[in-house]
Image: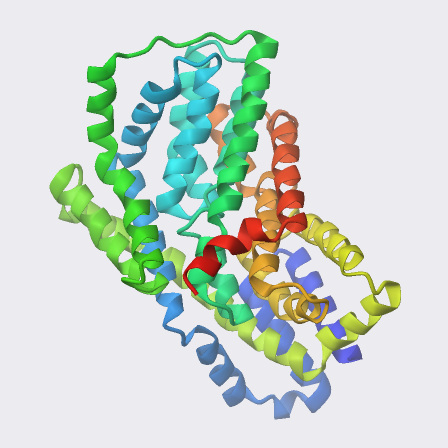
Length: 429
């Protein structure tokens, strides 16, 4: 047990020194074996086997395909088509461009599965359009940051796939469980945007006419079909979550090269290279985290922490609250993927012991960690939007805070009412 806590201490120190997450986790494992067995007796063969076993999963094939889809949609111009359609649809509302911002991000979330991809792909378009309409920069930047966080919640969700592997739950259940919470996030942001519109008397856009609305819908129709194909196929039992990722990849390739004709073979190869690099990074982290999880299980650290928590309180509600506060704090310092890899093997057995459904807890965990993408000091979405907007980092943080609080309210609702996450998965079981 003491060695387990010591290994987590090594990990924290190495991460604090700026070492990459995968290297920090792998090196922590080596230090553990060196301290307990001696440097000459480190079981390298077993470590390699655990690394390979950590990524030897059919479900994990979905991750590179979803990454490929997100990059391809960004490069093919699908984001611009989605934004134009969303703008024509809701811009006649007061403060309509703020609603467009949220709606476009929600639609793009059904293709990218990444908050950073949303911020990089749609953020520039959204901020430019709102500034041209004389929106206050606090609202403009705040809603852009917050709406980007819908991406990792609504399927396809890369964090949901990672969690499903590590928690040994159905990837299909995890993907479906994120739909209603993601829609609630969008609704909360749209309500807050409507309040801002009335408070600051933001302008209304003009209705573009049925002909233009129809034209923009047809232009975006192919991109809009992506989440329909994904979720429809999964819910109807036509294909699994992994197979859905492959189908989405083929559809995105067809859109970019045949329907939109916006990308040639050379451009697609460039997207494949970037997708391969991003996928390799995630897989390397996952393999090294498998070693970490194996060691933590051997030293019974989750059991020890569970016993300590039971000593604090035997109330599941209190334990959930403590874990939620902990995850919210961790999200400020770790990326979503790294935190899921490190914490899932520790926290899931504890939450199951207290009677929580692992799928329900998984959605809560992902939502809280995703908020960390927009909180200092390491929130990647903040840095992307800071670069795009040209505003100081501190200004972007302050602008995002009210909208992040709205998302936090949604997380609390999901925690209080498990059917918000579990109803859709129950329909396909």
